[in-house]
Image (cartoon, rainbow, N blue to C red; front, side):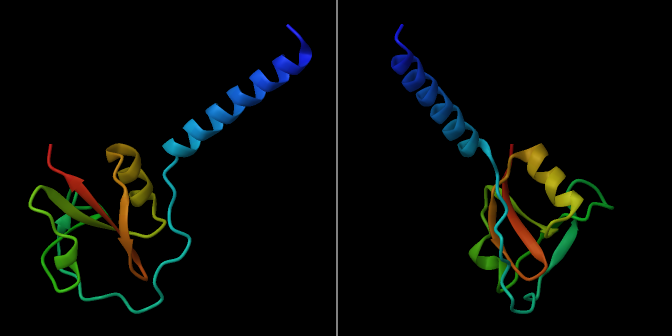
Length: 108
C-alpha cells in the first residue's frame, strides 16, 4: 500500500473512533442557572433512604418535567451521588437549578 493511502485510512479510523467516543460521553452542563432554587418537594432518597439523589414530587417547577412513565430525580450538582446515578442508570440531564441537576429515569 502506498503511504498516502495508509495515512488517509489511519485518519479516517481515528476520526471514526473519536466520533463514537464523543457520542458516548455524558457531559454535564457547564453552567447552572444563577437564580435561587425553586421550591422543590422531595419524596425521599431515590436508591435508598440515605441517597443524596432525591425522588422529586409535584410542584410548580417540577410539573414541566414530570412523566407518568418515569421518576424525576434531583441530585446535588457535581456530587458523587450524581455521578454514580448517571453511571448506574445512563440517565441524561434534563435541567439544572442553582444547586440541583435533574434526571428523568424511566420505569423498568
